[in-house]
Image (cartoon, rainbow, N blue to C red; front, side, top):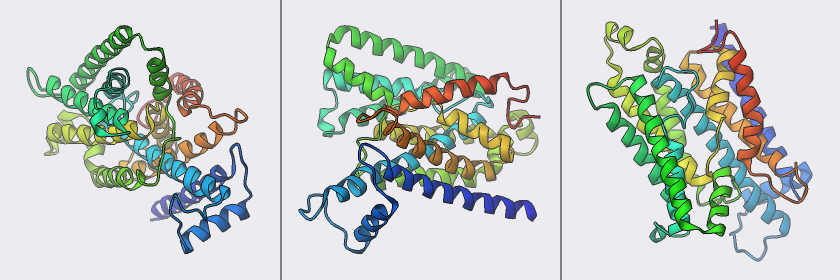
Length: 348
């Protein structure tokens, strides 16, 4: 009982930290605002909302409500989705080094974006065709991994990893081949920037759909905490307990890939979040997915909101792609976790 109360209090603390991080993110950037300005603009918008093209919109209203608020909310949603996807992938393949991109999903998304930018494939989808093609690529690779893992018998965590690695290598090779054939300097620069990740393109009309997909998926995985705990024990133990994890593993992989596909569509490629956040949470509260999933979601949200704010203030009058900053933070942290003797699913 006391432990449950402690977890509840910890959750409210993280929600408070997330709210503070969003307020800080609204205040920093090329143009800085005080908390009183932010509060007044947000309250005015709630009391009498203005349309995007309303002439009454002042520069402060435009910057805070139309530019910074949607990108920070998008960062929070995507951070939660990436962190929870990392939790699920690590349980599916029973590997503490897994992250949302281990099964080749990132390479599939990269290939989809590459052919869209360099060859114009998918322009019928409208102005967001690059993100949509990346989403299609990510989902196609996910189903490809499932297909390969089912060849020659029932799939398991090892076959999923090997199938993902094989398809990742194929997609990376095709992406390089497409870039070589295209000989388009401007297109290559666009691909490079897109692969670095950014929330600059976040808009209010994008948020509801992505938020519903990510939050509903997180709630679903939260309801599956018992099965996810069982996955860490292995298939043999699960069968003795009356559970066949074969179907669960495939369903979880598809839903996780759905989250990653929409993340890639909205913000490009952002790594390390799904690898680092779950382990930091495990080292704090343990391995029970009932608490691990919501705490990882909040941790991922806080992490990306703060990272997005830092990207807008590290370099004066410029914005650092968030993928670069995340890699600079994530790589040394990952090395540190590797050398820890109790590295694994919760340590010793």
